[in-house]
Amino acid sequence: MSYFEQFMKANQAYVALHGELNLPLKPKTRVAIVTCMDSRLHVAQALGLALGDAHILRNAGGRVTEDMIRSLVISQQQMGTREIVVLHHTDCGAQTFQNESFHEHLKNELGVDVSDQDFLPFQDVEESVREDMQLLRESPMIPDDVVISGAVYDVDTGSMREVY
Image (tube, rainbow, N blue to C red):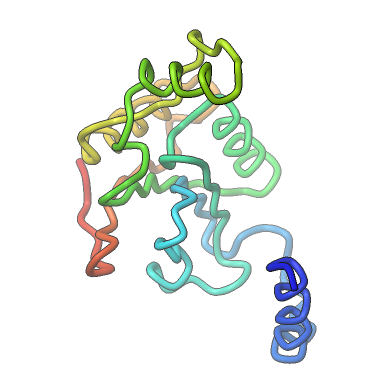
């Protein structure tokens, strides 16, 4: 049985517990969270969020990219969010490589030249949060009155520390 088949079976049990919530389309807290795709980070549980509370946007490294900004603009302009939280974490996979070595890896493994692609690796997790918060503050598509905060989640303890 594939994992997908297991997921479909598990979903049947979830539906029985879920019930018909009829949640509104817009997030209750008016918050969008930009975070990493890391499987050790359960954002909703870590922040005490329930279904329908916030938009949780994930990508590799939790980085603010052009597509992340696209999603945030839709979140704000169509769904009414007024706050953004940038949430990166310790022991991130984006800290394990450099662009140059990854470009070479992809050329060797896939036969593709992506030397112009920035995969947004970083070494300092707090600095990566600061960089992404700054990108949001500087974006002409993010209004000045949107509250932007940042934190680092510790994957070993579950605790968070604010980044300024």
